[in-house]
Length: 604
Image (tube, rainbow, N blue to C red):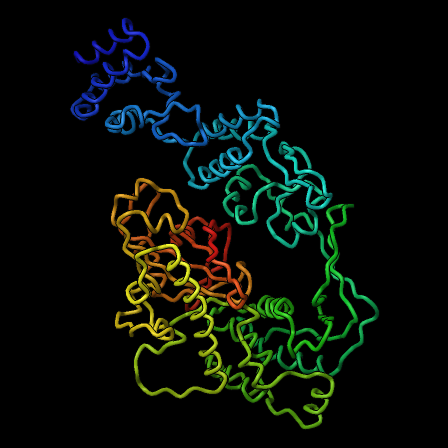
């Protein structure tokens, strides 16, 4: 109690920085002993501490302070740097919190009063991202306070728009808009390219949009997403010519693909495949027309028919974009939810009819097959060949997953025991293809860490059997309990390699478990997780604010067959899935796709 009386006396007698040393000693004493306070002593402590001494503001109200500050809030009254030994008093006893939504909104209100030309543009973008991150943490706040903060945000002219210089040739300039103005969020690169310079687009990289999704949801900005605002149609150039051979071919395969879905008795529409001399994709936002681009396929659906227009033989050397659209169409139309069957769709579209039976039997589909006639009479085979029918077995070997871009399951590429197995030719092609994609993805991740970690050793840190393909020693560990790469960090090197700033982790020993998922197509393509991999993600999940001993990451390699594949890292994917930032479908495994996923982009 004497210390509390002394604190009152100091407030009345000491002025300026002389108070810092005196009150610092008292705060430290109270921090060490406040757990002993009971009853009315607790209330007296709070009454004495309603004002706190801070070098930047003198004696300031406690509720004006935060505990841990941030570089994007230069004017905040943070106590951690001034009284580092007093966390027990300020954080736990008096409830002083770190930077939150209210503090960040207050900073944005301050920035709103600064002339556009005088604003620190990069710092403002960082502050907006920080606000979104705070909202994403789901920290509870009173409803009235939440509404007040949201109301303030709607009036602020602080959202930076992309420069139109790249489309007009003018000098770059930054324009700021408030929420009530007409502007859009470029959540897809192809749409951003089509409308840049034609409408105002939020000046954030495409990789930051996932990080902004909590803020977008909070402020109800979903209607500003280009993917929601743009109307799109594909227009034929010239009159399409109906191709009977292609149409018959795809009708048959549609019957087989339907067996992979949840309703094997689904009524399939009539398929018509036609050839056009050109396709043009037109996009509009209201009366505003975006840049047109060359289309690859047009799929028009009605209740009883599906009309497909292509530019060339759809089943020989077709473009990946055509393949993806056709595969996605069948997955949706036939309600294929089993992740183990999704990858078979592209195979059924390309395999010879003889191999289709093997593919379906490999998916435990037997009885229904007997109702289908796998025999193709010679006349139909000849007609299909003349008009550009399906490619044979060689097309399967060319790349069954190039269209769908599925993640690699090591359990599919490797047997867990060494007993004899008999594989059909199609199954061998599938297993070989999974292994090929997985190896390329793991090589890319290994090369990235070799460049960024001086002590990286593939023979030690590459903990999967695929390392043997690059001449490294056999991996003798248990892959069911081990990620593809494992690295124990004692100095924060991994954080630096990934471009992540978490200074509190630097002095701790943390083991990173990195599971690699490679796909041929873009980031949006789903990938697969086995039960063992999901167990690792769950076992190594950690809560925000905790310093973990183990961290599980997904090394997401996409465009894996390009000269320079792309690489992103998903941190703590178990928690990301719980928060909806990764979307998971469960059925004999896990099929995972980005939701509002925030990832750390890297380029080796």
